Amino acid sequence: HPKVTIQTIKKLYAERKPIALMTAYDYPTAVACERAGVDMVLVGDSLAMVALGHDDTSQITMDEMIHHSKAVSRGLRSPFIVTDLPFGSYQSDERTAVENAVRMVKEGRAEAVKLETGRRGAPKIDAIVNGAGIPVVGHIGLTPQTAVALGGFRVQGKSLASAQSLVDDALALQEAGCFAMVLEAMPSLVAETVTRLLRVPTIGIGAGPATSGQALVLSDMVGMFDRFTPKFCQSYSDLGPRMADAVGEYKKEVRNGAFPVEGVHTYAMPAAAEESWR
Ligand code: KIV
Ligand code: NA
Image 1 (cartoon, rainbow, N blue to C red):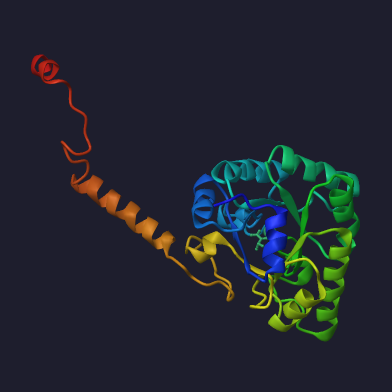
Image 2: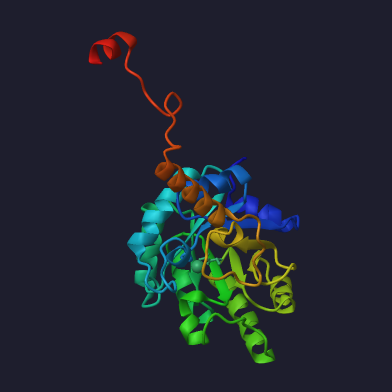
């Protein structure tokens, strides 16, 4: 697959070809995305939950995100790699936001960063894009980093006022310089309106079919996260149970002596050495 650049993403958007974004958390998940030829890979801070077992995404640090972003980058050649700036790394002031975005590019090998914020974060996005020259993906709607303030993991934009607020956020983020925007968990109609009003692509997750692209969390769609699966997720595999079955099979064969098999999984000495050893 040829290298996906911002130009490629703009072209897909102009040609109305839906953009496929998938999350990845380490080398093997990155290799799966590389082989599948997805357009964009997101090192999402969802990794706090699906790869590290936290209850939410609030505790993951810059250092942890960088560690995973580096691993993902080693598995990718063609997809465009975006890494989430974690909670606390861009909220305080523009200077801190820029410093952490720069770290994510220099150390984490990200090509762009994603910030979960509406219009109140626009000055930070402007500083990262126009000050530091780092492409930014916005993220509005259900923003898990601020789920507590939203009253939990809840669909956004169901009321007219809340829908209007999402439109205002989207326009402000575009104005601040985002080259793309994730729309998470909102009515399809609201996502369609936002998509129509913007001149940058929208990447929907639980936002219906009218967005410029789609995103899913890899662990959810391959059945690797056991705690819960959101309604918007389509199940494409059941790797979690299959992995557990494989480990169970191994454990059984160790116990009953069926594994390892002499002559199959084993090494032998050269015949002469074996002779005198015996
Ligand atoms: O962290 C993540 O996986 C995300 C996607 C849901 C867009 O932000
Ligand atoms: Na995220």
